[in-house]
Length: 328
Figure 1 (spheres, rainbow, N blue to C red):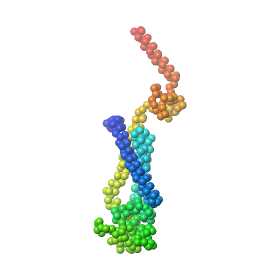
Figure 2 (tube, rainbow, N blue to C red):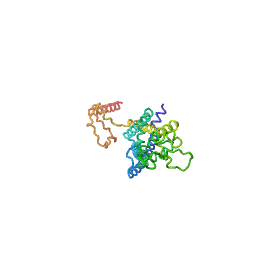
Figure 3 (cartoon, rainbow, N blue to C red):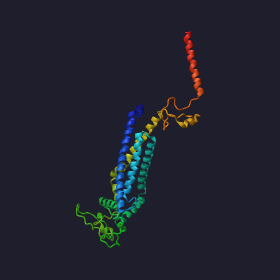
Figure 4 (cartoon, rainbow, N blue to C red):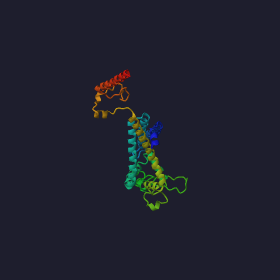
């Protein structure tokens, strides 16, 4: 215990925590700034093509929110650690803690209310499918998911009926069909027939088992996450662990600064009122704008009568000492 206390009181501990927190906050500030720039670029391109307006369906909006949050929170932590500012460190700690708790709540809500969350996700995916050819960002994401996880649509392949071009009421070559990314590739690397999903929406599931993937992507991704528990756990830990590290370092540095400030010769103005001192009686000239600069004699007013009594006692002691020397 004694060695641990000596370690925490050493300059090495102070500079180690300070350097670690500053490096951590600077790194994530840079990452957040990069994500924010990518989001701005993506949003500018999205506005040019007048694509989807829904926040969930626009990856650019997600990148903007993520980048701004990462940069702003990390920047506050970086400045607070470099300047030893306890207020900024408190803001950094509490905001990061709120974000961490919110993420945990979302994970628990997804686990407990899986069906309801899937319904919300399904409605958003259907909205994206409705504007599939209007938003290239969403189109590319959905095509990748359908090919990667061997699925089609949100809940099932019939979700494509909401799209104007794929509706069975349409008259084009895509009518009553699904995109080619839903098709089953029998030979890896074969040339893709872009009309392989032609006239599949008006057929039963059993007739399409060898033609397209009939399972929805919500269920396919959910099954993959459950079957690959180690990968899922790694993804969750990679998201939460850096935040835990930041919270621990911010807390340690915050407590260290509190110890340093408590050891300084400072005046607690709240205690002055308790001790019958008035704040207005203090002579703060020379204290600076922060009221923290040292002053010879201090800022606490001392009773003049007490000073006189102390001076008289000192004079009496000196006279007694001189008389004893003369008698000797």
